[in-house]
Length: 126
Image 1 (tube, rainbow, N blue to C red):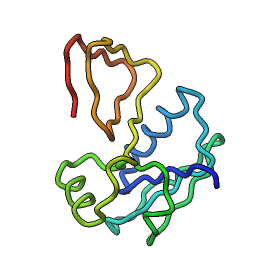
Image 2 (image 1 turned 90 degrees about the vertical axis):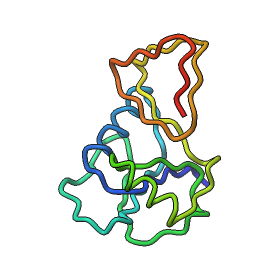
Image 3 (image 1 turned 120 degrees about the vertical axis):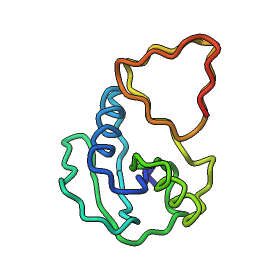
Image 4 (image 1 turned 135 degrees about the vertical axis):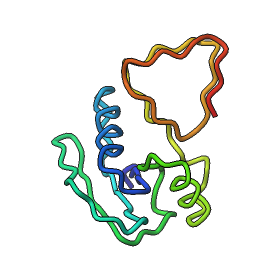
């Protein structure tokens, strides 16, 4: 079975940033699924020539190897995690290839870090 990435949420700009960050590594996930669990209208389509993207209104969480959150608001993130109770070991970091990070820094799971960012020595991001 091919690795599938599930993006929980529907933040149009957030999903575009996730795709751009994956693309910066020339990372090609065979399938990217978006679960619009907030029942909000999607303003833009997510076409990208390097990714096969599908939007779903219902999903089976067990079918996915990797998960990331596609919303900005912390309250929406909490609601998604509390409602769906995803396996935290499946959360992936989506980090742009242009990130500058000290080897003494520590990163948690499920982070989205864009380009032009520097993370100083001894920094911990949960």
